[in-house]
Image (cartoon, rainbow, N blue to C red; front, side, top):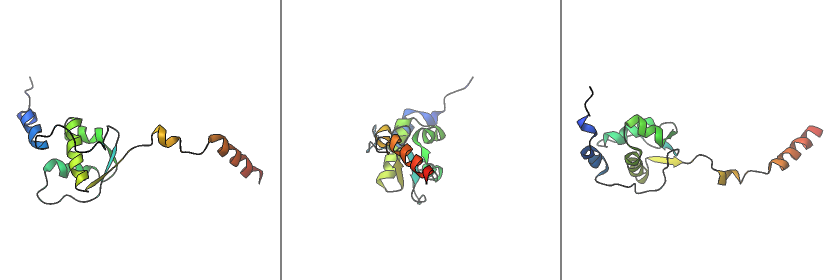
Length: 118
């Protein structure tokens, strides 16, 4: 029989977020890629330190939450803190709106045919 870890209760989550229930930024969704822009500084919250170390390479929000063992909503609040401090950057994967800015596939095909004819 397994017993719940007392450190995973609502009190701990409340403490982690300073009582906030929403992030200060809407910059994050599940697939947003997060990259550390600086090293942890002395006195930082341990979860912030873990995030900065974990995100030396682009890491999705959902992966960060899983690694920390925290709900995504709590993870987004912690990420928002780091974003506000300028310690991380958030990048979104290419979306359909960005794909619309790509050149027309027919135009690319014509260019390819023209290059082959050279």
